[in-house]
Image (cartoon, rainbow, N blue to C red; front, side, top):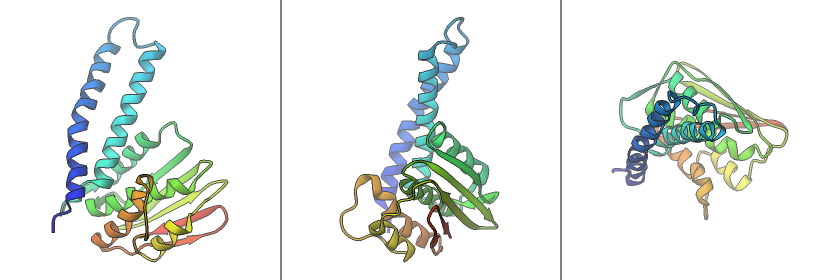
Length: 197
């Protein structure tokens, strides 16, 4: 059966990336004009366009249709995460496998979005992989793994009850892992947790 929500996500991201790209291109042209590129306002717009582009690219892979047989370069995933988290309270160290099936790339990005919610005071998310095995390690000064969301993830199931829009990744991650033929495995201590798949 067709996943209509994933198709809607893909369509929205596809339609938004063109105007954001056009704004970015316009900013590059304006940068060539004397006196504009050094201004604070110019830097703010340029940074905002880059962040919006990173968000759309991440959302397109995480929430869009996975597609069969499509491979995503590990470097592209690392670049998307660098754009998305650039200048934020979360440091990203991404060294995923050289290439991943798109369905597995979706799992990686949804897992990162889940991990972000546990890092209340910021921290570090590291992604490593060999072959097609991936481990996400998150650490920070104050971890908050909400049991309502993380216990179901550790059991490879969707959380029950109401899910807020900011938590939708928790409902999607187990389904994406199943579609990618992966099992989620969670381990943790006071300052770090690992999610392997």
